[in-house]
Image 1 (cartoon, helix red, strand yellow):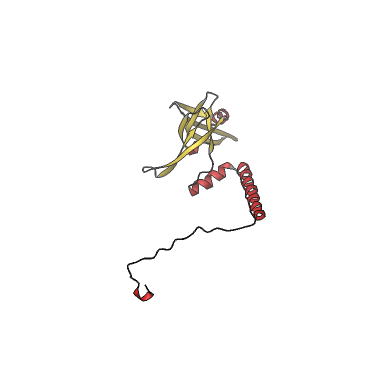
Image 2: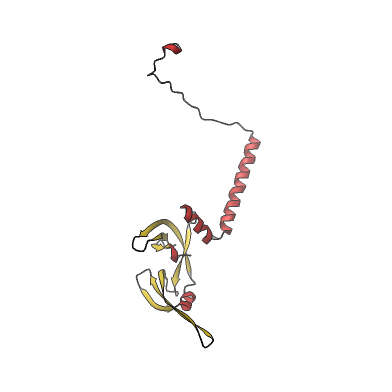
Length: 170
């Protein structure tokens, strides 16, 4: 067939080959060494980075590179805190002295609620933080309050899993 006699219904398909590049072995070894060094440098930077700031930035992009979070425990009882709420916040100057009455209500993982705990006592008794592995992250939107909530599913070293609001970790 000549060009003039080509049937328009016949389609000629061209197959493409994988492209390959030839380089010297010394150049290849140099590139591999450079990649290995960069990998070690990145690992070092992740270890030295401020995990809180990194987590905030990564959550904005939808990525989740931080794979571990810490969950607070209450007063050496081994019970994990899954939430708290400030129920009283009265601060004033009385006769030249600064007076504070700040109380929180604490929710533990078993559903127990510890009512009216002084904020200072709360911070003193929640110094224990258990490192947990982050399994997944989900976002929930509350239509009534118009607030987006990020929930983490975490796994403790014991194997127990827990779903917790991201505000109450680290």
